[in-house]
Length: 442
Image 1: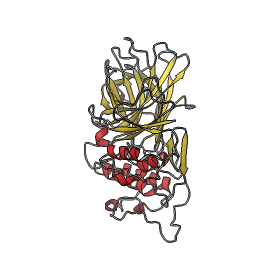
Image 2 (image 1 turned 45 degrees about the vertical axis):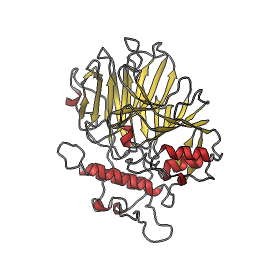
Image 3 (image 1 turned 180 degrees about the horizontal axis):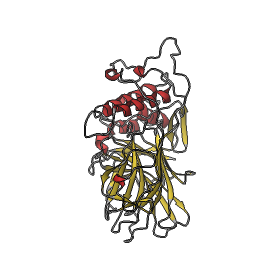
Image 4 (image 1 turned 60 degrees about the horizontal axis):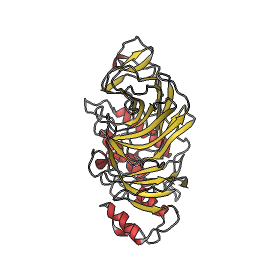
């Protein structure tokens, strides 16, 4: 596997949408790690910052501003390569990378030690979990370590939760927002279960340490059974409270959710918050090949880790599209940061498909920040590690139509938290209570 640090490219070839991508024509990109702050990711166009890219074959040409890092994970980087890397990122110092650092070491440091849990000054660190451990992937190779309070990723993982809790807690009593104090208490309860922490005061930010926690709820689902023409926002889900309009109209036809707005992206969010950002969302999706031959114009999607503010388009998206020959189903993985889109993964299944037939697409966002897109739940189409969107608890559907409405549909919607490990609370291996605080009192 070949490793590079490459500049993001603002792609404008899709007449319906522009987005950031690191695709190189004719080259299979195995892995993408975004090396931008959340602020930078939210900017459309211009100088897009950088990403770590692992490809299956050497790139025919390295884009201007890009760096080739080599193919041997254990090889030491040259002095020039280390200086070039630290020179790309204003918050890094030349001394942050050592003369003995291998390619693995550099990725490890960038992924964990040189990241910002808030995402404000740089990318966020990878998180660990007791179930999955802490892992860093370099192409087909994985470096895996047990995750516990003595691991160096433990405190950054807790710090990310605290930053997310503060952000969510700040809008709890805003009458324009749906997120409730019970929602954030369930978020706390789920994290306690996941990390084996028995006292919420050891997990919560110091200013909210007495707010406590609540237990887990049931999954949410919808078979979209209702009268033809019922607006989705007027429909009650099979299990759940309601649907909310983010953009444009979807209604119910033949017991499926159907786009009802031409030339538009129809986005709806389930009004109920999940208990954790460690969750999955799936639906049976159907679409058509575009009438004007543009395969990107029509797609059906599920979205997860959607921001609590309804109008804020920050989320992960798994898209299903058909090609012109109807021989492939394309599943694309995207993220949006306050409305600006970045492509982070793609894949396809080769088999004869039928327009208007349902194909199950599942988007899974794990506790260790591994994001996967599965088709029919058994075939992994795309997998990547992404740290940018955390602490968001909402899911939904997107039906993106071209000139003709009524051609993109969703059915059998389901979203749920992933199973958290049970067991006793984690204890201090040196004796006494386990206290998880940093020296600044966060």
